[in-house]
Image (cartoon, rainbow, N blue to C red):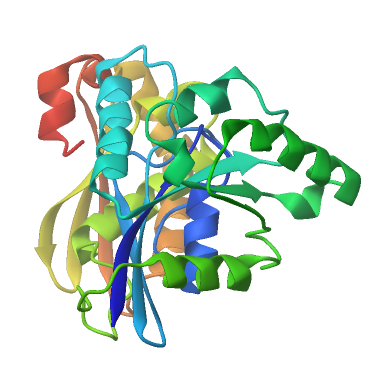
Length: 279
């Protein structure tokens, strides 16, 4: 038996969460077209033959300007130190630059695997050019993949299974995620708010389940300013209503989901509040 923790790291918006879901074959991490969607480590578990791969989706590494940003950067970097294998994920639609190089300097890239994601969105020639640039990093292996179409994922999984050290399975064979159900519901609520709100508001939103007495679930949505409260609620409650409809489609039938909005002034700039909200 082989088993390994595989950390997926990279800049924001390179598609790490979509890649994790594609590798596992099930949605275990929320996705959004907005950078910095992932704020905590999310683990997805894949059993393949005599190997168990525990993929760790991490927040995008970026230049932090808030206490929240500093915390999520630290979370991502911690995951590289705890991992058996590190996968540096790059975006085929974006030029290789200083951001990717800075990320690669945060761990021993010579032992890492570089994954060029979103190859379905570029020409073969451009993807090859990107790989040639990435080769400057001196990583152990390079894999062009598309989390959207699945191209290249089997080859990547095979390589990771080969590299996994000998050891027992760390999770039961029928388990695909270790995220507690209450935390998952809170993330689903945040995912829908990311889709429905605009400009700077998504980064001011945090969510947490404050009551869980199935089938009754109470989820609190935290914003930073009073003026943001109305934007989250929407005219006559339209935004919250739509959020509730979409979230209920993804949780067990019969759930009674209550959504409440609260103001916690400038929470993402205050380390104590960031920690209290679980980041």
